Amino acid sequence: MEPRGQEPEIKILLHWDMKNSPIPDDVGYKDGVRHMKEHLKLNFPNIKILDIYGYGSRKLSPKARRECDEIGVSLRDIPSKLKNAVDKAMVVDMFKKAQLNPPPSYIMLITGDGDFTRAVKELSSVGYTIILAQTPKSCSQKLLEYCDHVLLWEKLFGKPAKRFTKWKNQSL
Image 1 (cartoon, rainbow, N blue to C red):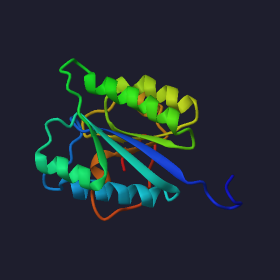
Image 2: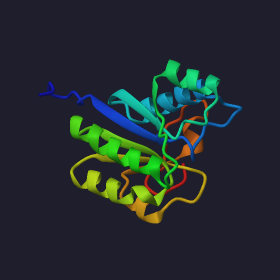
Image 3: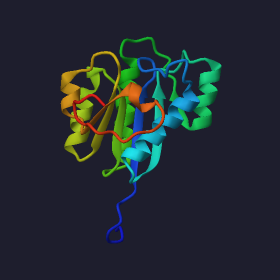
Image 4: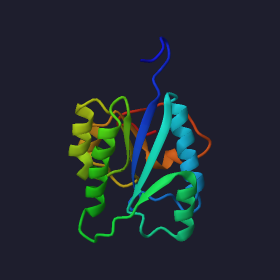
């Protein structure tokens, strides 16, 4: 039980579709992830723990892989060439991590893929706060509907960190 007047410490479980949402070359993974963490801490001050899982990272350069390792991104290489193998691995991991980290933990996705709609709907229905960093490509309207907070991916790794002033289906 939290002392009166004190916010509980919240954990964000961030699942990142790296294949479809890479950090731009001119930013680099180390700086990009650092800026992303700054933005999230500024906008969600009760966040104390941030676990980042990157999927579809097999094509990352050795330098990018090293930077991810140094900054605390757990890379999940998916060796299968089957269609949607990365998406399926992300969904399975989201539910596994959710089971180990009940609400008030937050689930965050970096994607725009509508394949995650059902998983997001289910996690939201059992009390998880869902954050979506939508990619520059078009994003599934249904996916947006089940998210509590929606931000633009490109804004997350920009600097300096800013408070987001718009949420839920609005451009930040």
